[in-house]
Image (cartoon, rainbow, N blue to C red; front, side, top):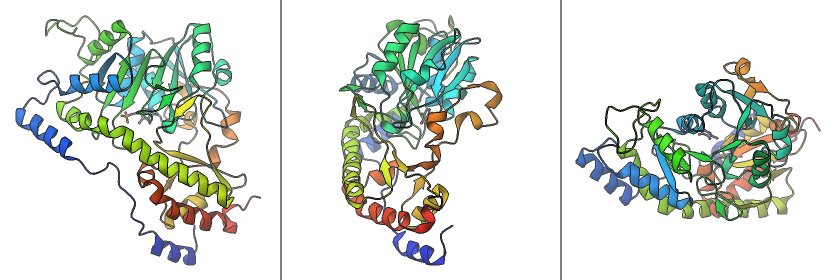
Length: 393
Ligand SMILES: *Cc1c(COP(=O)(O)O)cnc(C)c1O
């Protein structure tokens, strides 16, 4: 823990006025929510906000069909079910991701296979996935982590070679681009989340995208108690559940789409300026690289890598005390007792070399744009130059 002197310094600077997330609502959102509220068409069968939002979101990502659901976890479940994945099947996913990836897979009855990621960019690669493929593998759950698109060229080539389906978990990558193409249309199905922390949010919410007409209908049906679009109310040909988003949530989200690009650009200004400052100051920390082929990182979180020998816990609490909130990020995925005996955990030697040196700067801080960088650099400079930051060197 920081000592008294550090804490005192910290208190005076921790008053730093960061933007908050989610950002303040705008007039378009206020109008849309009131319109839906007064219409009393709150369910997606009664109104058309959900339908319109799904189509607008799909258009924005250059994909043909969008199906809204209650959240991003359920979106992954519906995507896997639509692909026919269930008991006896294996789904490969990265070890550096949120717990929803394995838990959504377990809901289908399939087995999550947790594989290693690159120590450079923290994504699965063809090499790490290949280590995890068995005769039971059916799909790869690619995660565009922290706004950074996964290296899709090599992953798609491997999937083609082995006849595997691809689900893109894009919960952290609204508006990110890989080789000038938005994420979301680079696999069979992609999934998004609109939970409070995400780049677009209605408190909760989720959505699947696909270019495939049949998968789109299947996902709609699974989400709508097995009905078919335009079919009878009490016809349930598919096994499905009520997993629908509400009209009020869609009303909050629709006006967000035209703002998304500007908000990504604002976060990018923070990162560009911070990169320059880090280069100039020679601090023992760097921004984690993007894979080759990244044309736009949507900057959901900024992942920093501390130099070897760092005491990450001390550094994180000292930064917090200095007015720069940070997160330690994900613990080892396969280490959670709740899933440990239900997954296949591949060794993760690459990730193990860096995991304990990673720190996240949150989206809210990046929303300060270049104006947020002087405070960030000051906090990093003061904390990382303290001898307690690197006791293991
Ligand atoms: C947030 C998140 C999810 C789950 O989304 P929810 O809407 O919270 O259910 C899934 N995968 C990743 C990578 C996420 O960050």
